[in-house]
Length: 300
Image 1 (cartoon, one colour):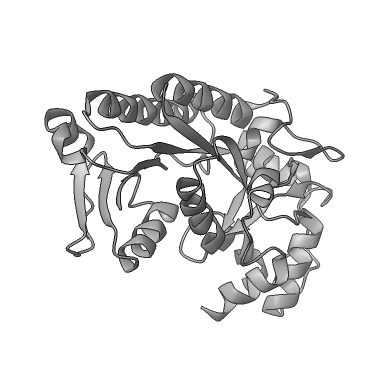
Image 2: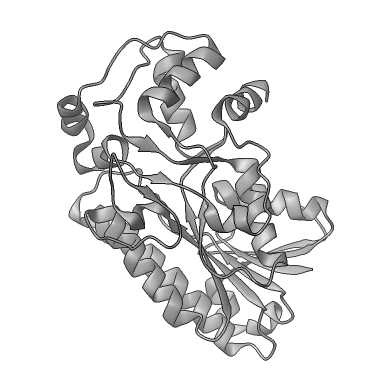
């Protein structure tokens, strides 16, 4: 198989790249610029958006395009920061759409990164792919615009909108930052601790991307979350248990808001999201519950 991965050098993209290279697939990793330390492999080539615009033939014959590109939400939400977050997502969707429109033989499916923020936040409600979307804050506004841009850019193609929760991995993403206070001996709940955390192990999101590609009946929103979400309090206690560190030092909401501003919404608000479409289509999670997921990360 031949796959195009936009954002292939990022947290999820680099793991997906290694996974598919081990399976013998041919990959094109696309980014704004070429990586400083590229992976050398006969099945992998690196291209920039500019080079593809002038030479789209390099992407001909791909079986799927996976777009994981976009600036991280983990930065201060200044007006400039918000603009960069929104702009990066919309521009990469537009660039991917333009690339596909220029191809004689288009991929059968596009997997577009999205996020569970599109459901809004709640302490009581549970969401699946049939739940309505709600714009209640900056993250939900970003994801709504992101998905609408994808619907327009990839019109006529099978589109999977991968609504991700918190992806747990050691190398990057949110988990190293969430684990850090425990490593320093100051772990504890954040705010009330009652806010939901919908998570997924890095291994499972890689497997789910491939599963969606290989099952033609899957399209539209797909929640990339484990089937057993937890509260912030439960998550913190499990980190303490697995890593044998104390869970005792609560971080008040006002202190977090003072430290990081509006970005604190990500940690203080949440949503309980279930992967109904994946489960109903026969996907099985390697790590459906939190403790084995954290134990695997600890063992690495």
